[in-house]
Amino acid sequence: MFPPFDPDRDDRKRRQLVFARGQVPIRVLIPNIFTLVGLCAGLTAIRMGIEHRWDLAIAALVFAAFLDGIDGHVARLLKASSRFGAELDSLADFVNFGVAPAIIMFNWALEDLRSLGWIAVLVFAVCSALRLARFNVALDRTDQPAWKGNFFVGVPAPAGAIILLLPIYIQDLGLHLPSLTPLVLIYTIGIALLMVSKVPTFSIKLIGQKIAREHVPPIFVLAALFIALLLTFPSLTLAAGSIIYLALIPVSAYRYYQLERADERRAKAQTGKSQAAEPEFAPAPAPSLALVKPAKSSGGRQSGAKS
Image (cartoon, rainbow, N blue to C red; front, top):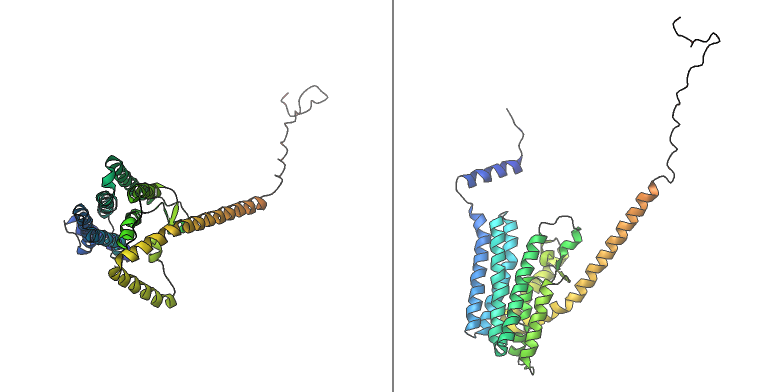
């Protein structure tokens, strides 16, 4: 009369019935809408770059990076993660952070180098695609320690797109460097190689972790300060953020290898303890019982035999 109640199972059954009837909950569409709006921002950045409107191109790219940072959190918050959303997000990331910054950089400086400049932006776009593909494959791995989730392998695509435009930020600040075009060529290829490298970098997944109550007000103040600086002094804020990010790459690599060595020492210690717990000498095998042939009687017959 009163069957057991399992909320998770009942919720899964309800979702299966809803999808089976051809109905999709509105909450499932919200993260995909964020992704599509970010894709429109990336395409707008491409148009602004072709029209040499650099400020609007950078603003559209930064807005696309902001939407890319929150759409995954929104999907997890609403429990609306899906395979379709993951594939759509990857395609949008390639356009926003692989194609858009490459075209902006080519129209800004590398166009003067003609074929060499085009090769550089092609390398950047290809490395961005490889970086995203490797990231999607790494999501299926569950045999890694928990601390590795705090690091990316290589520079992520959104960060690579933002720091690629560092020469534009510097020029907006009035710092004109001599022979800028060859330096931009080398810098573009360097950022592309960092994206496909195995250099550990800090992950923004730390945002999803819990923090102490006393740290909440300072974080709110820093977030408001960053947004105010970004809206008031965009070039200076983006240039400082890009330089700080590049400077933190050696720090993140050092921290990663430090944790990796500590993990190896812990594994060796556990192996030594397990070996010490085992007995040094195995017990000797028990002697086997030999079959003894019965002795003959004095009368020449075996004992117990019939006469």
